[in-house]
Image (cartoon, rainbow, N blue to C red):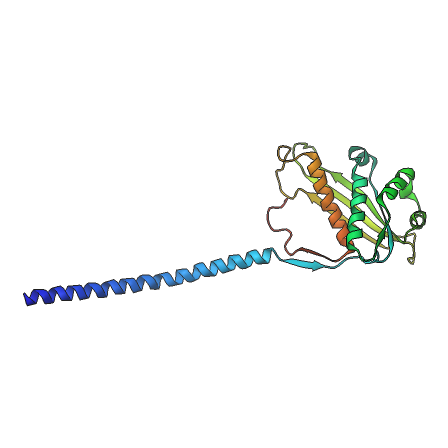
Length: 238
């Protein structure tokens, strides 16, 4: 009987030791895996934070600060006929952006600018110095639109808005008032996702989005602002 009890005791002890060893081995095998998971989570969180970072971008031209400014815009006749509200909307919204963000700027009422452009249809051919004199301002921002569309060529079922323009500045008190003091090219696209069709949005929504994107980008030329550090990440047009 004692022998049997001893045997049973040894079996129980052996079983306990075996179970503890198995438990320790299991824990040991899980520890590296847990470390990998934590490292992966930390990496993913860090990448997401990095993706959402913004950076300060300085103005490319500061000559509008503490100056009187007029905003003019021009397009070809086909664009003006197809999108009759584009020019007045772009001019009006540019005035709002400059007035809000450029220190000390005094911007000419867009209603006056648009009326003057209609009453002076040949204004794009005038000597540049005359523009500032006619409007009685220190600076004239000229937006010469060379592309403006909502659809890709030959496909009216998809939205693929593009607004492109040469943006130039006339300085009334510059070294050469008959030459542009600064010239930039801005090309904006909206929407920034592929495959958006008429079932998802109408022409008004697309044109409003395109104009806002375009006007924001033009405005950024004239004041310091924050931009996404990685603007091309995510779902973008190819």
